[in-house]
Amino acid sequence: SFSAGDNVEVCQGELMNLQGKILAIDGPLITILPKHEDLHEPLEFQATELRKLFRTGDHVKVLAGRYEGETGLIVRVEDNRVVLFSDLTMHELEVLPRDLQLCSDMATGVDSLGQFQWGDLVQ
Image 1 (cartoon, rainbow, N blue to C red):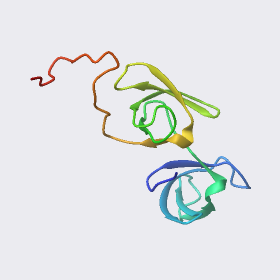
Image 2 (cartoon, one colour):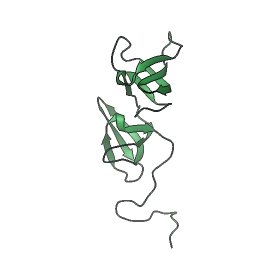
Image 3 (cartoon, rainbow, N blue to C red):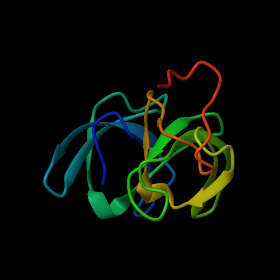
Image 4 (spheres, rainbow, N blue to C red):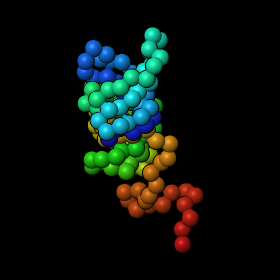
């Protein structure tokens, strides 16, 4: 569930807690560019050694789970869960980091009450 451009953190081995951005994915091998003052060369890791890294304020899309397709702004990041504020429903959603991806677009649709919003084109 990783893709190029994702921010990640090493969660196993001697480089644990090292952060970086994914450059390339080749099967189970993932190449990242580390965000570290002494490391400037891309490094390879197994997918199992990495986890997605998100920060408060990131705009994300839910890729799997009960909120699949929703987008929102991250309001809290905890150990193995992320709380985001949905663009569509204006509710807080709790999701696993592995089910998220950074995104710039927003989910569109009719809200849960089937109401229209100001500016919607209707017939």
